[in-house]
Image 1 (cartoon, rainbow, N blue to C red):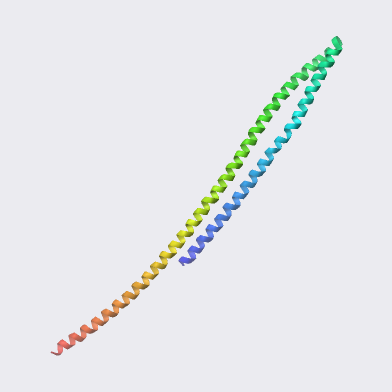
Image 2 (tube, rainbow, N blue to C red):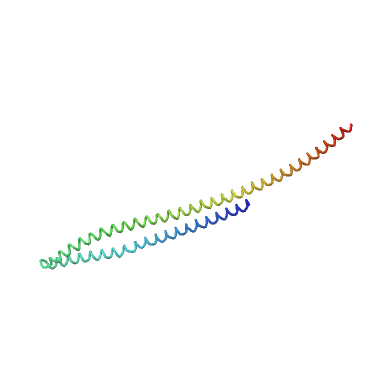
Length: 182
């Protein structure tokens, strides 16, 4: 019965370890997807930079055309000023977006590192606990066997003592009978 309980305990530990490992792998997989998705933000930086450069070129061209046209180019001057303000705002927003993307990417990478590290540590702890559990089961089993051996030895000793007591009793009766004859 004790052996069955030990076997059941070992099976439960194995099942628990399997669930921990599977859960850890799932967490790592989700973290990897998050890292990959965050890297997609990086891919929009260059197109944004290109659009901003084109807006700046339009602003410069509008300013040049306004200057060439002189008084007749006042409309170009208004457009050029609006393009300049739009370009400056776009540049500021682009910098903010890039900073936010950088922060998000750094945070996701840190989360990924923490998840991987915690998963590794969790597996190490579980493995150590599993080994300790196995050692405890083995030690307990050895104690059970030792107790069984002691019990067998005690039973033999009791049997021997009983036999000696019976022999003494028999001899005492015989001695008593002999004494009664006198």
